[in-house]
Length: 419
Image 1 (cartoon, rainbow, N blue to C red):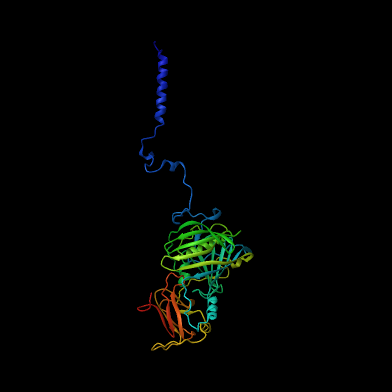
Image 2 (cartoon, helix red, strand yellow):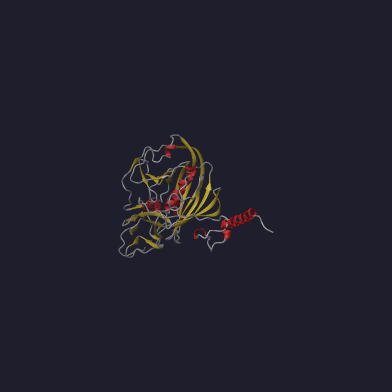
């Protein structure tokens, strides 16, 4: 049977259309569109569930401020700050009591003349206590104990729109701005050296339990300087105040201030800093009080009545933080000890032959600090044996404990002075 010409063309065109359609659905031969031969096809079809995600270094992560506000501006230590524009009235917030706890402190040796009551009294006086006022956007941290290398009543202030801190010296007459990375040297050596900030790795470690009635979750932070565990809790209407406290503690481990550990209404309730060299330092909040009447003048950064202090901060000589009477109370009376040949001093001579500030602890109590090259005599200790240790304030350098006879000499560094 003969097929009509028009019908033959219709069939041919239909077949051509089907073939063209099938060819259009084939994958391209371009190598740029080819799937990775080593990747599972299911990996691109179903996303893997999120687990404990490790945040890369802050150099790689974007800085996102709460509520989408502008990025904080870093503070410079050589330029006075403009007057604070915080409203001049009472502010709501929280007042915290807190403490730093040093590790590896060695108590007194066993001896009948050891006076536990006198040592406990000295421990309370040199306890590293702090009072911290937090508002929605400001922080004031005040040093209270005698055990700091900074004078008591020194304040550290911060504001949410600036990276860095302001040091207000006792009495409030002068202040000094310090950039990010300077708190480590300030607390450890009474210096304003700015240490290089190193990338911080951050990861969630789940629930951290309750501390002082506050439920916490645990965050792990690691830098070149330290490995830290932050127990982070929440307080209603805290705003960014807790973030400022987080930044201060991160600064001690040379982490960038943009490292995201605390969020809005969150604060670090406990932090344990373990240094990569050795030793550790812990921070604990011991009390929380809600306040509706914090004077704004106490939170201004910088304070309205303080003048910019351009002079550098340095540590010279040595300072003994306990009186001869308080040191005499370490023992009920003199012990039976020999006097070293040629010993003329009636106290303990301390010599720091290292290149950094060191603290002298006696029977686990901070008794003095000594700047590099400093020499002094601790007067008041009854004759006897004491456990003496040299250390840095942060605890990242610890000399071995030595059983020391007083009167005598204790030296760190130099030919025979240890590390």
